[in-house]
Amino acid sequence: MNKRQRKTALAIARRLMPPEEFDRVMSIEINDLGFGYDQFGMEKEMAVLSYAVARYVYLYWFRVESEGHENIPKTGSALIVPNHSGVVPVDAAMVGVDILQKAERPRIMRAVVDNFMGFLPWVNVFFNRVGQVVGARRNFQDLLSNGELCAVFPEGTRGIGKPFNRRYNLAKFAVGFVELSLANKTPIIPTAIVGAEEQAPMIGNLKPIARLLNFPYFPITLTFPWLGPIGLVPFPTKYHIAYGEPMEFYREYGPEVLDDPEKIRMLADKVQLVVQDMINHGLEKRTSIFGIGEN
Image 1 (cartoon, rainbow, N blue to C red):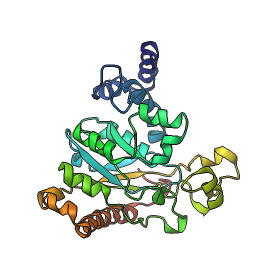
Image 2 (cartoon, rainbow, N blue to C red):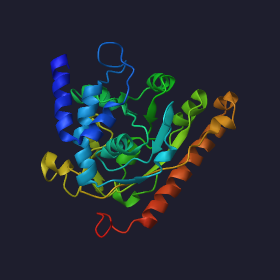
Image 3 (cartoon, one colour):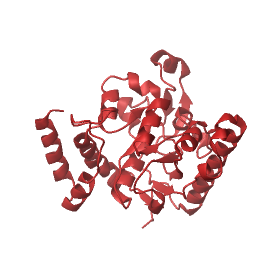
């Protein structure tokens, strides 16, 4: 955006938020290269405007409740590691909004998205402008070196594309986030999201169409493709997000463990077990998928 567009974006964002919340979000800092954006293309003005819009979805569609914000570091690098689900990955956006809104110090969560997103016209540029980054080891390394708060979804597309009959059963975690945590001495914040699995129950996957479009899956849900694009609008399920205590494996294991695939696998499994336990606990506390009757 040029200067005029950035000014307009902030004017719109100001109108969409209470003054104190606008001031809070504007306090975020980015590693500006001197051109109004950072090395990955994030523009503060676009990030703030996107937050201003997404907060309405957060507050009035998913009505997000959350806990454990004291476990999110105020400064320095950290890895938010949640489960991932819902066909349309709005769960990641809701975590990002939640951290900006409720963490003691507002921070932009830099989610590293799947590589195939980098090939979608306009979508790839939008992700860059709001602070998200195409998944690559070097990108992760640079973000953590810059002291950023990052999110990694170890289930990947296997999580958001899982069938409804496997809801809340985690797909096996990839191990890359553990290697990054150890190499960069970065804490892992296990995170559980309850509510996203029911937002778009996936009852089938048209694999031939997915291969044709180079998508990881092509979902059949209760509303898609029967209602066309509008069928991708998620149901207004109620979200519950919980952030667990930091897991700091680098305090126990030295850099030599990076050459031990079995130990790396063991540590990734340990994080997965913690996230699964947090999910199970959240499901036990939940009284309604849509929040009916909850305060």
